[in-house]
Image 1 (tube, rainbow, N blue to C red):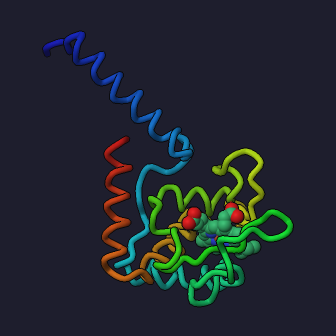
Image 2 (image 1 turned 90 degrees about the vertical axis):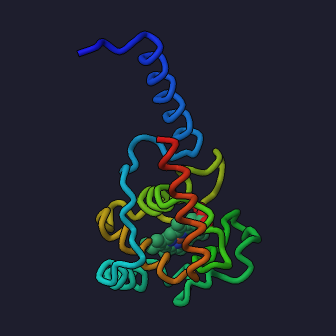
Length: 161
Ligand code: HEC
């Protein structure tokens, strides 16, 4: 077998380094699972996610995913109200990976230092599969064009890896 040339080796090391930097820049880190497993077209996963959503998320993010009133304005204690997860919020501006780690690890971990977060960590309470399921449910509630735009955001992040 032909040995890889020096240029090939340097090239792939550079690509790997850029991928690591991109992941770090996005605040995702290496502990996030690599695969995207929240499938809005999987009826069983969506149903499971709806159960999790009602039990764990609806109290803050709203039964209809509408979020809390004035969600862009900080409360006196420095926290933000819970944002909507429907198309009026910015959940769909983020790749699955970031939504996953935010749900698992809570809002403070990936926010700037000093950020006071009202988003709890669910890693102790929910399995990875339950977190993917609740994301599948949230995605299933977006209109098709929004789902497609978020799918393209997922693809861009995947290409950086
Ligand atoms: C105690 C209230 C509360 C509960 C319960 C809660 N959240 Fe949140 N969540 C928040 C707040 C407040 C934010 C806004 C960001 C922050 O303060 O860190 C947020 C932000 C988020 C974000 C980031 C949205 C974005 O656009 O950046 C995701 C994703 C999220 N929550 C998912 C969930 C899921 C899934 C559940 C249920 C498993 C859940 N949350 C339960 C309060 C809550």
